[in-house]
Image 1: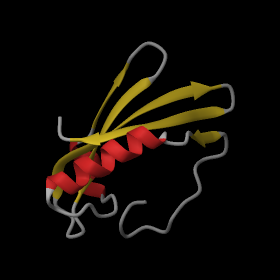
Image 2: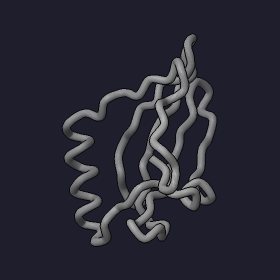
Image 3: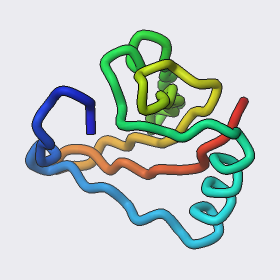
Image 4: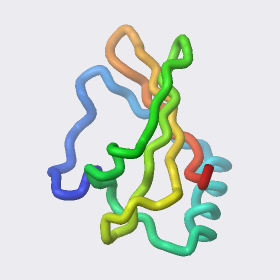
Length: 97
């Protein structure tokens, strides 16, 4: 969700994979260890986030923000794979690179 925007459904054909329990546990521990709360995504997140085509998918690092909108050092790593009907988004760890 991006702050200031209505929640949107993913585009037709886009699937979002579930995050496994171990990845969720590690990500939560990393967020708690960071010391500042994480807020909703803001437009500012996309100005510093990066992506790279890896031959069959995009590797994405999305910068996370605080509730006040400040970009943190925390990132959400994800893979975005094209499929015959759209895209498969595979969320990964939240961590400080």
